[in-house]
Length: 614
Image 1 (tube, rainbow, N blue to C red):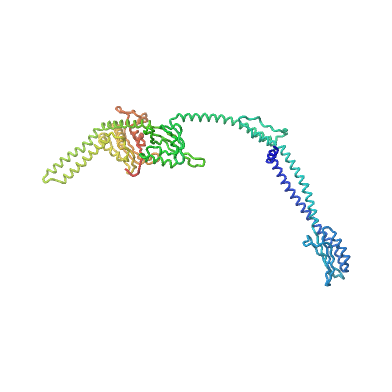
Image 2: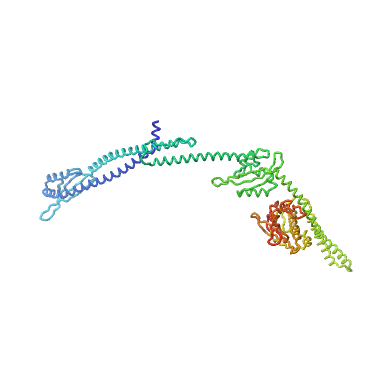
């Protein structure tokens, strides 16, 4: 326990504060002591240099007299007096003469590297002239100076170190008393604080100060934070309960929904299926497989799957992609799926998530509806052709009458003597042309009468317009209707069923003729225009059928395409509904609008497949 207490104390603020105070105070003390010792050193050196200057003024003349008299004893006494001065280590007087044994008197010990060395000339003055007798050499040492500085430094450091240590511990105790023990209590309170069971507010074990200090501010801020956290926790509890309730609600929805949920990874392999996945199989076995590994129509619908996989490669969302799967009993079913791409936190593609639905029953119902609609459309075609019987009979009678007339003329040209073969050839060419024309009319009628399943191929909208006008030309002449035909020279081909598209156009032309037949006076004009348009950002063919008839009523215009809605006394109200259904099955649009003048305009928009087919 003692060791743990020491270890905890060692990691606290107090020891670090103590170390920093000691280091800072020691650095300041050393710096100030260094400055003081340096100034003392400079003072001692100047004192020694000053003594050298005093020796020059006090001893040189007497030493010169003694050297003139060659009084070695007197010289020795004098230099011994110099040696007794502080810091002097060696003094020597050397005679400058030509004699073999010059006078040399020295005291003390010579140093190889003296701290301070001075040399003075000794002269004798006689009759105003000075004569050099010798030199006085003096060497001084700084040993005593260094020793005194060292002693002074030791005394200063001991004194200041003791003072710093005591002051630091005093600061440490004050810090502990005033700050760190309260911080420790605050940390202990925070470490055991539990929002679910909040303790009473923290109170510091100290006398209340006269004026609030920083610790009081910390406690006040913590108390505000504690109250805010408790309020936030209560709100979070309520929000969490609401989230759990909402999550359970949506889980219930998901578990009872007919849809099921799925997820795929970046490689488009399934990573998740919800428990609602149907078809009587364990969908867990499909984890790791791709959608096209499950589908039963990849080989039979390659273009359908190519467009879907292109969407996946572009990382785009998709809706209502329908494909076939096989039941466990080997029968085929239909699945409709929708999905959106998922990205991770770094923006990398992480796969798709979405929903799927078994639409087998819906597909079967739609197929039955399509068959019923086809039967109804066939009946409508029969009705329309019945109404156009007189016009069609006229269109057939014309080439037949031409054949008969040309045949009689040919016989007459052959009966001539000699036979006129060139005129006969021209007659036969007219017979061939009229027969071909009659055959084409019959072929168009037979195509409209046939009850065949829809077969979509690339067709030319302009050619469909021409074929239908050939059937209705007599009807237009009978009602004195002027035809204005403006077909674009280059429009995309469309993927569609020729007979169904002919039926739509035939129905629109028939309605236009009936609308204009009610006009007693005024010009009757049927205008058919085709041109290049745009549908959902892609090229499309637009065909407009305009008339100058009675136009659309303000109340019935919005219900034009409803089943069994009609404005005609003998109408069934199915023509426009069937027409719109056919166009929508071709992924197009059929709309109606009133003209600025008399009449109305019906517009067909069909998606184009390729450019350049008129």
